[in-house]
Image (cartoon, rainbow over the protein chains, first blue to last red):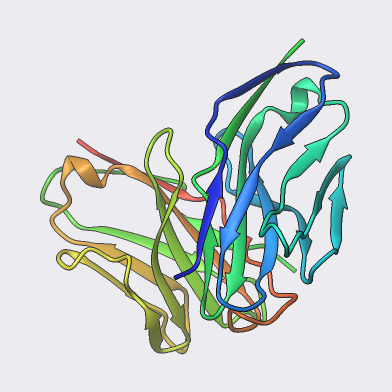
Length: 110
Length: 117
C-alpha cells in the first residue's frame, strides 16, 4: 500500500540554521507529493507541492524536490526563523485518499 | 470563498454522551476526509466521503463511530457513548476532485477539539 515515512523529531535549531526534514514514500504509480505545516492550535496548511518527478515545490523560503529515483521529497530551508516553529507533515495523494506521514516537530530557538 | 468550516471548535462531553462534529467543505468541493490527531501525535485517517457516499472507512473504529455527508448540509462525524480515549482533535479536509488527480490538494479546517470528562 501507499505510505509516507518522515524523520522523527523533535528537531531543534537555532535561528538562521539550515533545515532538512527527510521524507520518503512508498506508492504504486506516480503520486502527487505535499508538505503541510501545522502551527499550534490550528489546522494543517499547505506549504508546497509537486505533482511529477523532478518538480520543485517552493514557498516562504521552503523547497522540496520530487525525486522519483529515491522516492523522496525532503523539505529544506536555508535559514529558519523562530516563526517557523511548527509541525511539518509530508503527504502523498494517489488513488482515493491522502496519506500523511507522522509529522516532524520543529522548534527554532532565538 | 470561505475555507473549510468546522464546528464547534471545542466540545466537552461527559462519558457516555454523544458527540456530533460538523464540517462544511469549501464551496464546490464534493470530497471530505476526516482525521483524528491525538496529543503530540500525527494524523490518523478515519473516513473519506463523497456526497451521499462513504468511499473509504478503513480508519473508522468499528463501533460507536459513524460519518455521513448528505446531499444538502455539512458532513457529520458522530461518536456515540464517548469514552476518555476519544479525546482528541478531529480535523476535516475537503478537495474538489477525487484523490488521484495530480493537482488535487486537501484543504483543512481548524479542527474540533473534543474533551471527554
